[in-house]
Amino acid sequence: MTWYRRLPLLWRRLDVTVRDLPLALVLLAASCVPSLHGYGTQVGGVADRPMDALGVVALALQCLPLAGRRRWPALTLALVAVGFALDQLSGYHLIAGTAMPLALMSAGVHLERHRRATLLVGSIAFVALALALTRLGEGETPAEWVVFYLAHGLAWGIGSWVRSTRVAEAERRRRLAADTLAAERARIARELHDVVTHHVTAMVVQTEAARYLTAAPEHLDRTLGTVSETGRQAITDLRQLLDVLDPANPAPENDEAMLDVVERTRRAGQPVRFSEEGVPAQTRGGAELVAQRVVREALTNALKYAHGSPTTVNVRHRPEEITVNVNTERPGPRGVSPGGSGRGLTGLRERVEVLGGDFTAGPRGDGGFTVHARIPSAR
Image (cartoon, rainbow, N blue to C red; front, side):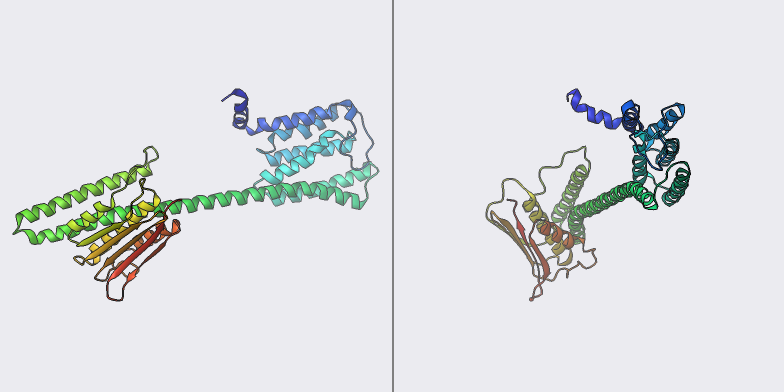
């Protein structure tokens, strides 16, 4: 990055008082130009007075405090107001009088506490200044004093509007961050549900079946081997999920194959007939992964709540969408799985609908249970 492109970044790194100082110096320099003397703000009709030591004090009080207008808005406003009053009462009428609406606007934006008290004190000070100027100078009509007050009040109002806009934007961002965090937590919960429920359910079913295989050592050994393999797969899936959550690790390129899910369910004792139409996409995008999750969750529910019942899985690949149908002969969960949180089917519905698809799950008329998903492919 070239040096001149780094200047904005370096400028933003400076302290806010340093960044506000140039405005104060520019106003100070403009007020020191002899040809501009007497062309500043004039109110009250006090006769012009040549620049002297007291004028330098009035000039400094109005300009230099602007460097702290964002860090110390109340102090800045007070000092500028004193300088402005001294300027008008003495008749210098400096260009520095422009600092008064600037200080009011900055206070409207950055003042956090005692805002109403500041308005009250400022209004009282204005009345006192108006009375003093009326005695010393030619004075102003009541309408002119009202216009002058409203003009400076407008500067405060603009600052307050900017402040309220910033507060609203900060609140919007906070809510957006909170919603994003909640959505991410829900996504993580669904991922954990997919991984843990499927594998642990298979392990529990296989372990229960092993109790009745003590008389057949070869079957018992095969069943325990399947339990061990399922446990290792669960650990692998959980590790991959944790890698995804860790920004220092790259996301895994592949998820578990659909045939692996079917085969593991079969080894757990669930008779599954699997058919696949069409050609899967070369790259496993969002639609492919969601289809695999639908099959996994449907088979997990069938294994858990209709163990031993014949289950049919049909997956149809088309260029524009993937259709998944899973049918179990005996009833499965009705809307929410019995004894479960219902997170699985709800999570599937959300996954499918995010891609613009359709998802249904419910009992059939003959007592079975059907899960259907239509998942549009990315175009």
